[in-house]
Image: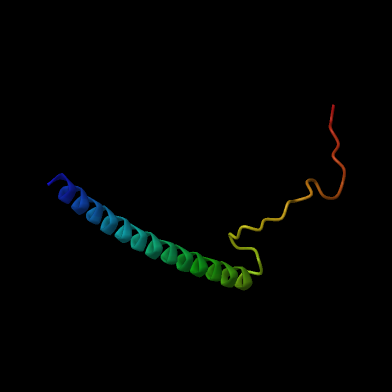
Length: 73
């Protein structure tokens, strides 16, 4: 009797693992599709705003430009 219960438990465990693999696969596909859509919109917005939008590529400024700084004592 114990062997039958063990066999049934193994079957259910296998079915559960198979379902979880399917769910993980669907999640990975959706994650990839959403990432691609976000990247596409990022490219379009960057193109429309000449790269000034809230993109990930930010240019570092060179600090103080032009003139000299004088301290008054």
